[in-house]
Length: 260
Image: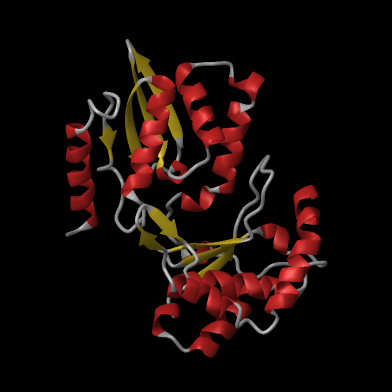
């Protein structure tokens, strides 16, 4: 069964159970294939929004420009929400509900919370890869050399099409994600904060290695849980030659990234 067919089926099943789940409907047919999303997690987000707002028609999207939009007509809300919000925290669900209900989001920090969340999950936004726009050579670190090194070491066909680039700075984020792997585009994106003279090569190389492992070990589903780092992933991660040193360096320097 194709993924798109699955989402179409899920739409129909969600519509059948609309009354028991609060009256709102769930629309998934706009989602692309191979996202690795968990249907129970999607339903959990829908139910959480309905607990806060009442009847909610939730449309999950892969929109590249607008991550969240909401309309309120009579006693029904219609939210169009990017799939990056699947699995978000209760605080972020509260912020989505506040946006939909029109509450003063500046006073309670909801607007900033959503901005921070989107900035920290911008890797979920789908774009086609243009090789000419990839920037692997940084001011202090050469990502392409690191990627080439580990592809040569592993000698696995699945890694040969992986590409790498420096990402962009997000605004207002209180957390940092050093790297990410996009399965659809086979793209590793590295946080530009790593391209500084005080960040050692071995640590940047470890992050490249970590993200490359995602190409080898895609997320697994166990019941309703999505396991991003399965045991075999962790086992191979610890085989990085300077693994312990990288872990210690990260613990000692994480606050420095967050303060900059």
